Length: 131
Image (cartoon, rainbow, N blue to C red; front, side):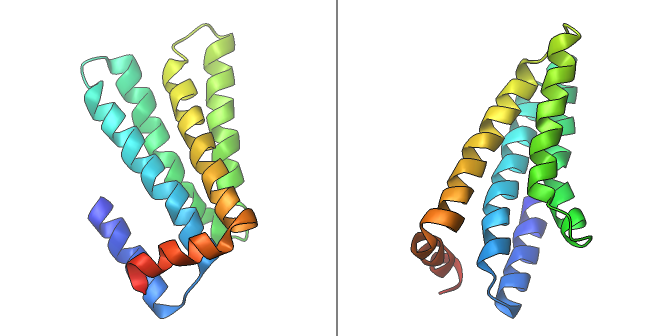
């Protein structure tokens, strides 16, 4: 799955350099990989496993929503927050969502910093892959 995602990113960036799309990929790919690896790690705890598997699908919303001109990054952020709030207030297992939300927020802050504050660093990171 990761190889396929990376191949699609590579093909798209070779066609047209888009730092915004590349930055979103810097958010989505690590989020998918981290949630999937956590799901595999917790494969014997079905409550944790299922929640991490649900969160591993959230990064796939960004490309689909982008085609509809909707902010997929923000929708993912809201989804993670909604998952956490629902589980927390229903006194269910909320820790996986807290981990996922924290990871997503960390990545989100990094990507926002690259896009809004340090575009030259984002351009250098892009150059590492396609320069």
